[in-house]
Amino acid sequence: MAAPIRAHDSAEDRISKLLPADVTAAFLSAKAGLVQALGENAAEAVFWTFISILILCPFYFWFVTKAKNYFQVAFLCLTFVVFAISIADTQFIGYLQQYRLLANVGGSINVISTVLPILWAFLISRIFVEAIGSRVERGQ
Image (cartoon, rainbow, N blue to C red; front, side, top):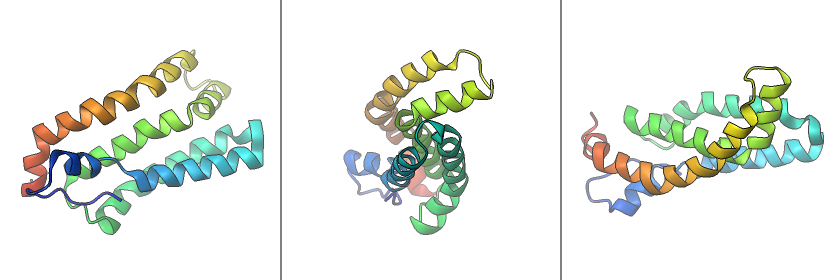
């Protein structure tokens, strides 16, 4: 569960507070259930489940986890997006191509879903902590 970043937190603690395991796990569980129930027809349901969770994320982070900084809440939401794309890349590709929302999106999402979570977890989160961590702690 995401929690407020404190001045005494180590770098590892700060980074762990930027990775929203709870909402990511909820999405992973929902995706697994939808794929099992709907099979190849699950793409639309998975996509809209993602959108629903994403809409609820700022409220969840603010009121439930008590992350009271806009930067941290925004970063947590973006982190959820990164990991959701990695978790449901096949369903996102299927949905977007089915409705022709994006042409030739498959290859791009495959690359993004493989590379971005690694960069996000090991590089971007650390950069965020270093660059904005003190502002998050001060509540700015």
